[in-house]
Amino acid sequence: LGGRFEAVTIITHSMQRSVRAVWVLLLNISMGMLVWGATMFFLEQGDYDVRTGAFTRDGDEGSPSPFKSIPHSFWFALVTATTVGYGDVTPLSLAGRVLAGFSMVYSLCVLALPI
Image 1 (tube, rainbow, N blue to C red):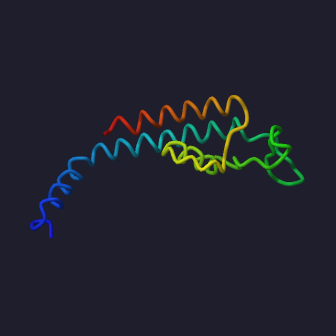
Image 2 (spheres, helix red, strand yellow; image 1 turned 45 degrees about the horizontal axis):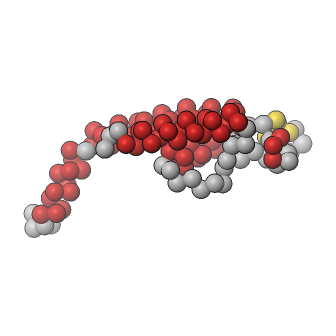
């Protein structure tokens, strides 16, 4: 199939030459997700409520925090890094919003460097 279509051959060669850059991108995204997700969890977890068994945030009328655990916070870091930004998980504190801003800038730099 690739021998007949020049476009397929060009794309195949391009993908083979880009493997190293893709690994660097995945490594940087993974490291950023670990660092930003864990830090965001500790900044935005709120207070633990023994009755409900969940963390509650003060700025959100005592509602449960969407940052339930560090793996749950990875979702925020990944969505922020890929610039999707669903808005289902948002930081409320000033420190959380500043960290989200740093996370966005870091992610834009990481996405632009390998290309």
